[in-house]
Amino acid sequence: MKKLLSYITLIAALVFTATSCTDVLDQDPVSSFNEKVVFSDINVVKAYLGKCYDRLGGNTNNGILGAREDLLSSATDQTLCIHRPANYTNLKGTLSPDQLGFFANTGYAGFLYWNNIYANIQNINNILANIDDVPTTTTTEEALKQRLKGEAYFLRAFEYSMLLMNYGGAVIRTEPFKLGEDFLTITRSSLQQTLDQVLSDIDNAIANLPASIEQGRASRGAAAALKSRVLLFCASPLVNGGYEATNNLVSFGTTGQTARWQAARDAAKAVMDGTYGNYGLVGTTDDPPAVLTEADINTYANTYFNIFNQKGAWNKETIWGIQFPLTGGNVNRANIWYGPNGYHNWGNNDPTEPAVRQYEMADGTPFVWDKYDPGNQLERKATAAELAADPQRNPYVGREPRFYATVLFHGAPWQQRPADATGFDPYNKVQTGHFYNTDGTVKAYGIDTRQGLIESWNGTKNGYYLKKFMDPATVGQYYANTNTWVEFRYAEILLNYAEACIELGGADLQAGLDALNMVRNRAGLPDRVTTDQAQAREWVRHERYIEHFAEGHQWYDMRRWMTAPNVIENVYEMKIKEFVNGDMEWKLDLNAMPDARSWASNKYYWLPISRDEMNKAPQLQQNPGY
Figure 1 (cartoon, rainbow, N blue to C red):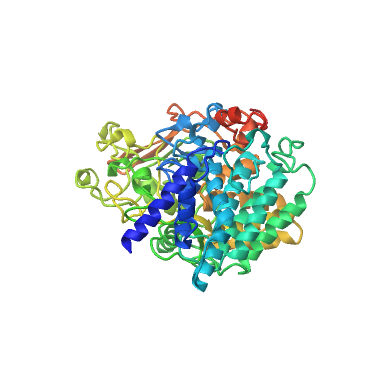
Figure 2 (tube, rainbow, N blue to C red):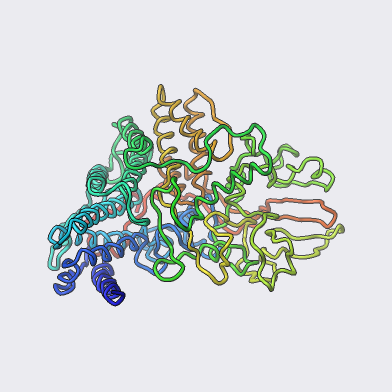
């Protein structure tokens, strides 16, 4: 049996390789022998489809959806990729069909690469074109066939949604390309036609999928969550006249936005009503205590952190995600990718200072950097006596629970140090600052800085590390992660619903705030109360920023809201001094700029089609501005 399963997997991999390493305009058909083998057994089809799940992340070894060394959030204002910052060409004014950088087939954002997406669509189309003819002998096999068809429709909808939300109108293809076809007749469809295709595939997926399914495969709930996400994007300012209003490749025009907000609202509400499965937030949504104790903060923080640290059965909030086994299959190295260099980790995707300041205080009031020195946005100083009297003089004390679940800052507790580092840190607390004598001379360099004595080249360049997605029980220096990447979760559905309701206003506004407040209460924060639509809009956008920090949502949010020019700014280093007498200093050093950034052109709201693809199909219309 083991040999048979290995053979099945190998055949599926061979067939996939034969069809996935080329682009949309240069597809070779599966050989008749391999096609005959694959579509003669429903279990082989299942293995073949499993490779299509893998290829949602691109065609490279690092091409796993979501979990990757360089995060999509580093293409936004949220985090800094310390190893390849220039690769984020959208932040450098260099993004072009010839210079895609992060968005090319590098293994870091292969899931957004036009060519890779179409390679996977070709494989999915091959399955849909042949699956009805696969023989079955039992009712169990027939049920599996129907389920696999539903999964294939979901995967195609997912891929076309990636095209829609990153490129606009796509080349719509629902049948496999065949050798000898005239590819010069292929053209892009409008944004509306692309949306219609996505929604059609989602409907077909829902019609064929069960409510529950083996973990890691898409259920009808996953399809419904995708529908909610896509419809929210399509209701947003960018595609409703905000940019190139008359270009139907990237815009629906200036009419019909209200109906699109209503569709987004209704899609989210259907998930909330349990139409596609029973989902909910983990933790409590009761009103939090008026004053959170340290124990309360830890409880709320751990609840949130553990959403991303699931290793076994998924909790009720997870609608769909990516599984990672300890050996074999997909590989997640989050701990070594993101962990502090003082643990022999690589320190990538570090939260920026403006992002850190977005996190509220534990009582729900805004964090105010210059609270103790009005007008000074760069420095904070506090003596030991002042800190004893008011611990919140330390900017990392008294913050909301999600801050402690997401960011590793100077003094944050983390793992036990490796043997060669325990002498530098017997307390297992992150050191992103330096230690000073009272006369101002350096006593010791922080072990997690670029001056530290453990792999200093991997140290943070701006004073923080990303805690979210890592596993405290995994020693990243030696072992891979097994915690799930959560792609769709119930909190997103609530915030999708909240935003759509708030944008509709009127009687819907309070319903939107109610959904928003469920997410806040779960995080230990008090309700938002207002009747002002503009204020409510500001709040829901803030909540999405914090709740989905580093998950990739900000890439879509800052584009669909057209706020990128307002949030993209240079990254500076937070320098921290901890004195032996207990005094502290924090300084945002404008002379230490690890990454110069700008939003040079609104054409970057859309990715360009690569030059290679345009050369093969010159009749394809390039996105505006390129």
